[in-house]
Amino acid sequence: MRVPVKVHVNVDTKQFEVEVGLPTTAALIIRELGISKGSGEAGRTPVGDLSFDQIIKIALIKKSQLKSKTLKAAVKQILGTCLSMGVTVEGRDPREVQREIDKGIRDDVLAKYEGEWGSQ
Image (cartoon, rainbow, N blue to C red; front, side, top):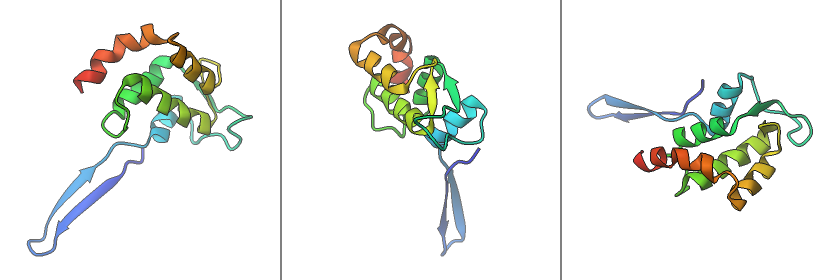
């Protein structure tokens, strides 16, 4: 899996520090699905299907890099990436799942993971 890497070099002392970052959201989605890349026709040809729990798992992994203050907002952000990659969520368009989150339909599932969001 590709991850961003930064190498900090002090040219005077010739010491260096390697900083390994987190994979991109797209890379995590690809890993969860076991595919090689997203869809070339995201709105027409889906490449895979994730469960809502897998979306939450990816949001928890990316927590430190996301600008979201709540798990709900982070999950919606991950769903946006799914949309652009041609990935469905439980057989449905990610926009439908985002609307369900807005209406509070998925609050019971999100509540199970709120503790993990706050503790990281």
